[in-house]
Image 1 (cartoon, one colour):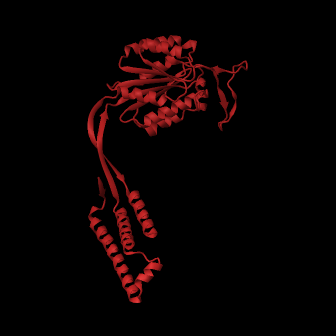
Image 2 (tube, helix red, strand yellow; image 1 turned 90 degrees about the vertical axis):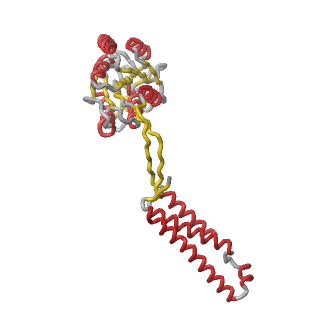
Image 3 (cartoon, rainbow, N blue to C red; image 1 turned 60 degrees about the vertical axis):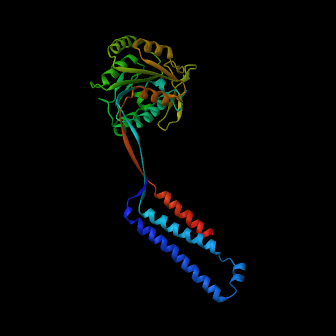
Length: 336
């Protein structure tokens, strides 16, 4: 529905536009009478570019309509639409992100870690009334938020953006999945909201974490209120080197062992599937990073319950369309 912020002045705009049309016709009549008085009007019309009556009427309507459209722009035209807004139950979502050195491998572009961050950011920006937490892990796990928050831009995304290659090289080396599970469970609140854990890793298991994995599994089996999704990332069909970069982002070499041998990383879906089967979660794998967004969205939709429907009104400024119409009508006037 179209309306104007200054609706009471519409009549004045229409009246002025009508006066412009009448003024144009009056000027045309005066010109016509002058040509008639000059003599041989039919002869002049035949060999000159003087517009015919029909063209003059069109020119008059064009300039009048252009003035009307420009006047309506000043009145701030707005377009209002109403649609059903489905209110959904808020979730608690804790992202558990692997920040071990192997996540810097570039079998996923730009690398496993950056692609995971990118898709988490895209998902969080589309959330509404959900609270999100963040746990990162390598050789040890760290909770980067003391409690789940719904302040996405100022808190969650700002902290997520701090995780980069320099952060990865600062944390203890390894992939301590067990410790990450334990800390992630402690990140949820005591409230009754539905709880979802999204665990994203390349799954390169370290032998020293076996005992903690067993402890985490025991705790998870006691927490039936947490829905757990483990998402593997990276190409399991080939081993990939891990590039080293300087502060400017230029590759200066590859990660090597103490003996100088190049380190290759290969995701381990088998290990992740074993854990998933034990804890009763769900496992998904994305070798390229192209499916992460779809996987995330499917997980969230699965746990969202509609709790109400409200009419939502959207009001949009459409002044630019009236201004475009003004320019089009002026162009028509000049062409006629």
